[in-house]
Length: 392
Image 1 (cartoon, one colour):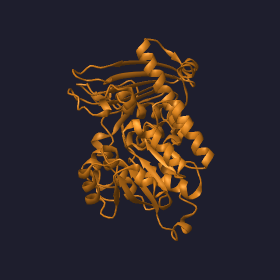
Image 2: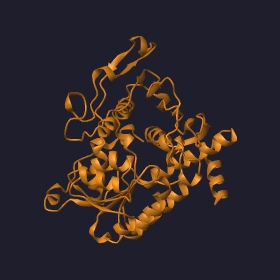
Image 3: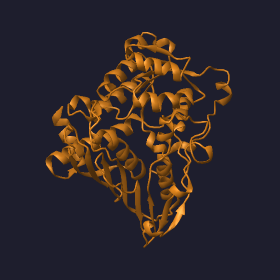
Image 4: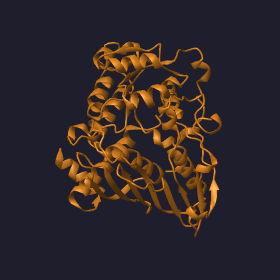
């Protein structure tokens, strides 16, 4: 896969722009108004001209009041059933509720004839994701996983450097999402109950594996280490994955809540040069602060733009920590591109920005990583397929 295919933020404009001017925006029902729903999905939907946030589903009265304060024209509902009863009034369902609900809610929405976006992970297993994909295909409906990190500023920059050939032939790809949270917060994301699909492997690992596969294609071997380090923690909070891709690239992926010193977000080593980038894309922080696309939200007020002091460095034979290499301007982050592409796909019947098949491939790797960590061995992905079939 061409690296730039991984970050379709520069997709061609909708060929049906004129027709869109005579149609109303697509009406969206959002299920869940916790972190994912309130910080990511609702603001990005509201910022998309071709979409209208119609209804928010949450049984929590405080969150209902929050939704009305942040989106005054939205309707609220206590249950997903209340939303599905109005299926004919909606054009898209977005599922941002806890992981355990993703599959049943997506299935119900598809059976009601509605296109669906599901926050990552799409499902707990690749088999479940493929089943949903088959249902969507049989009904001619869009099904997409929300993998917003493909539109991170640093990932877009890495994809461009690879596509341009600036690094030569990539040999090793290192990617991290590390945090310092020595005390568990609790909640379903840190639950040890397998039904909750919690733990950092499925939380941050969903992003890291998706990015690696988008850049370098399928993996043939998976090795992983997963630990529960914090007192009182129930699920993995410090995990490492090593992938061998079919094209020979090796990806090393770290995800941790216990990193007392944070490593670089990316270190990409090629045959002619390497690229190292520290820090995080600014879009999540901007959204958490209440900033919105189209307004202030970055350096100089531009959305997704970071200051020059945060740029990564490109070079060979030197350390970026001692000034080696040259600074590389970071491309702007572009989370709004995801829902713009969803709207375009719904209007034209085209391919969604992230397909269910791609989500299933990511889950296939995550399942193999879980098995590898539990058994202390490298998993060949043909073995992982056999293990999944045996489990069924």
